[in-house]
Length: 181
Length: 129
Image (tube, rainbow over all chains, first blue to last red):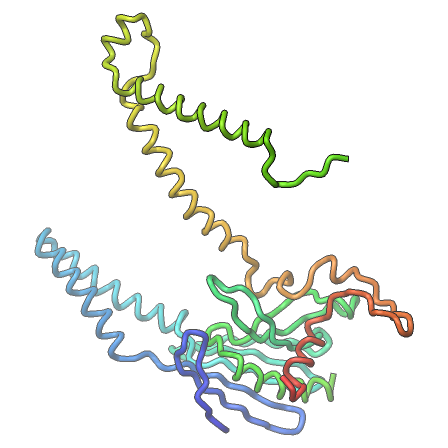
C-alpha cells in the first residue's frame, strides 16, 4: 500500500507492495521498472547500423537479414527469460510460503515451500561479485534434523532490493512466522 | 629454543648482498650473450647456446605471463566465492558442531558462534540500532 522510494543495489528505483490478506496471510510484491522504449530503440539502431556498415564492406545482403533476425529473436528471448517484471512472496502461517517471479512476457515461475521445511527467513550479507550485499533468504531444514540448516533459498534475486526494503519485509514475515510456526 | 623472527640479522644481510651481487652478475652475463655476435662466440669455441631469438622472446613471455596471472588470480577468486544460495554463507561444519552447554554462573560465557536468526533479531527488532 505505501510506496516509499526503494531502490535496488545499483540505484534503480523499484516499488514494494505489501498486502495483508488476513491476520496470518501476507503478500509482498516487488516490481522492477518496465523495459524502456529508449533503450530498445538505441540497441536496435546500433545493431542495424553496424549490420549496414558490414553490408557496405561485404555487399552481402544476408548480413542485413541476419541482423534483423538476431534483433527480433534476441528481444523475444530477453522478455521471456531475462526481464523480470515483478517478484512476489506470499506467506501463509502454518501452511508455507510461495515464491513467484513473473517475466515481462507474462511467463510466471512459482515455487511453494511447506512450513515444516522452513527453519527461518533471515537477512544475510554475502559477497556478490565485487561488493557485499544484503539479501533475504529462506533457511530450509530437514525434518529429521530440526537444528541444522540443510539449504538456503535466496528471495528477490532479480530485483535485489536494498536494506530498508528488506527490513520491512523481514519484520512483517517474522510476525507471522513467530505466531504460526 | 631459537625464536624465529623476521627482524634483520647480520647473516640475512650477507645472504641478501650475495644474492644481489649474483643477480647483477647474471644479468651482465645475459646481456653479454645477447649482444656479442654469434661469430665471435663461435671463434672462442662456445657453440652450443640458444638462438638469439630467445634473448627477446624470454623477457616478453615472462612479462605477459605475469600480467595474465594477475587477471587469472582475480578470476579464480571470483569463481571460488560461494554463490548466494550456498549454505557456506550461513554456517559451516565448525559452527554446527559447537557444544551448546550453558555457562557457569558468574563466569565469562564461552566464545561461540551466534546463529543468524538471533543476529537478525538483535539487529532488526531492537529500537536502539
